[in-house]
Length: 404
Ligand code: SF4
Image (tube, rainbow, N blue to C red; front, side, top):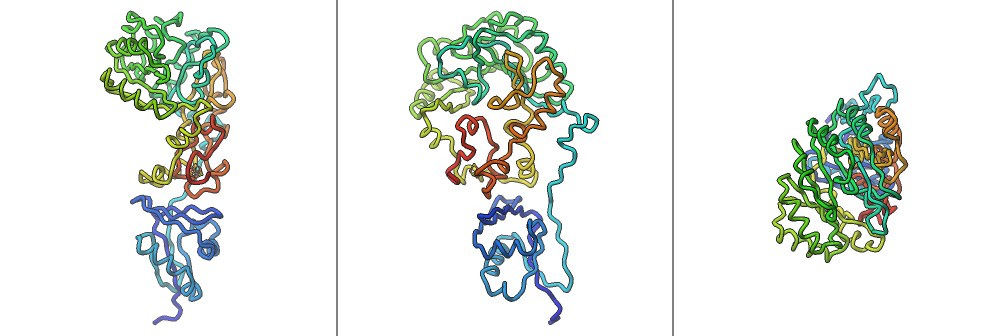
């Protein structure tokens, strides 16, 4: 046997390694299997050879063979995450790594900013502020905007914004209002929207008075989204559901639920009206934390239901996919990249400057778990769903049963 041979352990290039002071997390990007270890001796071993363990060849000596390291390396090998090799020189193993090139450079020549916009939500008008629990619901999901008076966004601004955005990759436009049918320039707006190839989603509240003559105007790639707070369901809602379902346009009912009893009511409504397409939207009303904890908070199985590729992991390290590419325009003309943070511009500004602001700010499109406490110390931070409006409204980044 050649005594000059050195012993190495290498990780397969499809293994992603996360490291925090709490431990090590080895993730197989082909199968979704993973192994964790929080043994301090093993953490030290991986740290000793390379501070950031992105070099996936590790040399070890007899001392390591005898201690806890060797059995753990055997576990990694038995799970097809790596193997041993003997060599007189240092072998080479290459692993994917994240390289960000000018992605957030504010130099206009090097990026097509408009291409970053994927979805617009436009509050064309608003409800007059009243004492309903849903006045701030737009901070949790797409919903009507309530304002001190009925304000409407002039059609010329809506057209200006969409005309700028449609040069890029935008695929859908949400039209929301304090009853869209009350919008004074509705015929011009709908005629313009009909001329666009993007999907249009018209949001109505279950209490909105329906105008069937206006509904007939909605054409080409148009869908109705009916917002239904389950707590408000009554005979009028029941009749209105039928009116919307019979309008001849694809309709999705978004049920707003606030506690477990709402699921039974929702199930009755679904069967009574033979609703084909629906979504469930939990609503935090400041009194239902326990419901949120049981229904919305994640556990480990929720997070690892899917297999994450390197691309998925690197995406989570770079952008917040919940917010990225989305802009909300309120009927007062303010534009938001995150409805729970300050606005990133107004309809008077160029959309390029709005996108630059959204890209430069780390509280919306780039709001990452790796940058906020306590997620930054969590081994699952690159796998966990991005921070959403719920975290912002509950003022808690870790809506999970893992790091509470
Ligand atoms: S602590 Fe943060 S990153 Fe970790 S599981 Fe909980 S929410 Fe996800």
